[in-house]
Amino acid sequence: MTLCEVRTVGEITIVVMPLQIDHVAALTLDHELHELAAREPKALFCNFSQTKYISSSGLRIILKTAKTVKADGGHFGIFSLTPFVDHIFTMSGFSKVFFIYENEEAAIRAVLH
Amino acid sequence: MENSNSFTIDSDILEIPKVSIALDRELRVHGFSEEDILDSQLAVEEAITNVIVHGYEKKAGKIVITCRITHGFAEVQIEDSAPPFNPLSIPNPDISVNIEERKIGGLGIFLIRQVMDDIVYRYEDGKNILVMVKKKKV
Image (spheres, rainbow over the protein chains, first blue to last red):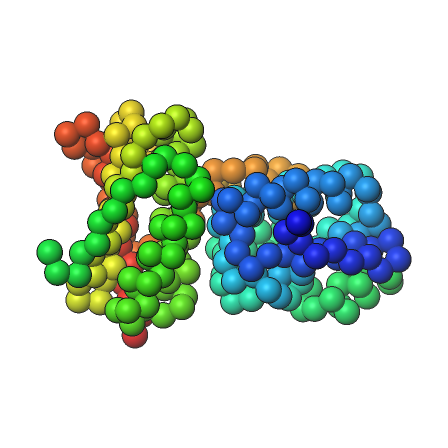
């Protein structure tokens, strides 16, 4: 069974992040995001609407994925951050290095225009 | 001791969720907010992960976690018998750089410093002892 639910809209990949991204979940997440990024989508978005908790292990995987997608010429972004996830992204300075969108519509609109 | 809970886990990352659940229960009973609980779980996970990965280098070992609640403060102590290492000696990562230059890793201790109100390290009787304090938000 996979950790993340994945959807594609044209050449855009949308990945729903799990409820908790602790060190243990991050190991599986690493594997799943690595496979999705390897398909070189035009854009890859992580949907954080379900995620209540993230630790540095999770941040590490998100950064790694963003670098891979960007290196392959794709666009990487995240959307629908819950309060704790937003708090951690802001605190770690990650909110300044990632494209963060309000919701899925805003994320898709950014790539299509 | 009143309002003090102590338990021992193996040096194994699969033990972390167990610690998070116990901490959640303990802090919730004492009226800590959701935000305080998540911050404390984060700090404890980061500290334990460091001990398992860098302290014991993923080899066998024990970690003792003690949680004390007093006058609106939660104090979590993490004790291990790995070689002496002061996690507070790790410099903060540079968080002002762009995505290409941003380093992967080095964030754990930085986050602990951000979310906890106080953090103290000492090496005593062959043990690394890290004490982290979270003040209850009112």
